[in-house]
Amino acid sequence: MAATTQRCFSVGPRRTASGSQDKSATLAVVKETVRTSLGEIYREPDSPLVVLRRSSTPALDEDELLDMLDRFDAILPPSRRRTLVFLMDMRDGPMRNDEEYEQRMNHAMQRLCAGFARVAVLMRSSVGILQASRLRRERPIVAGTVRPFLDETQARSYLLTSSEKPSP
Image 1 (cartoon, one colour):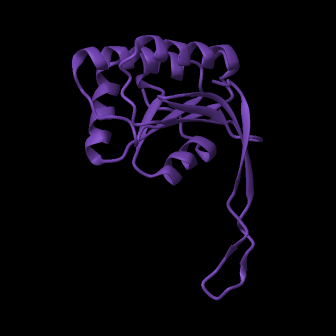
Image 2 (tube, rainbow, N blue to C red; image 1 turned 120 degrees about the vertical axis):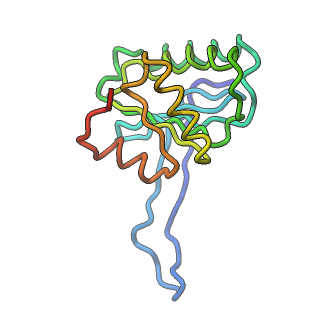
């Protein structure tokens, strides 16, 4: 599995309902950094934004989880993250809340979030927001850096334009 590849996404030009071109559309080039069955982590070019897109695959294999974390730390060590922001899109991730899983994921979250200026976690539902909020209260190691959202636009705005300090 390749650790680094490039993919291009074309999101334009689009046509409006009247048939004219939508000039606001852009071409985005994304440099993918880590991809496993658990998801992919990449940094958007010319942006301080690093994105994790979680897959629906359960993190049952401890070795695969550790391999993903090790590869991410090697490519982007925590010491180089302080000017970057992190969006964790967990909408496709499996819903689990058993103690063993939460402990494993807490350790992974600590490693993933280490060093970033701000972190937003994107959840699919209000139940997910409640779960993320509960974990944020109970696991104070990452509490000040992680803020949950339902809407990706709001999460990106918080990360990229907010002067708001992460709450403790």
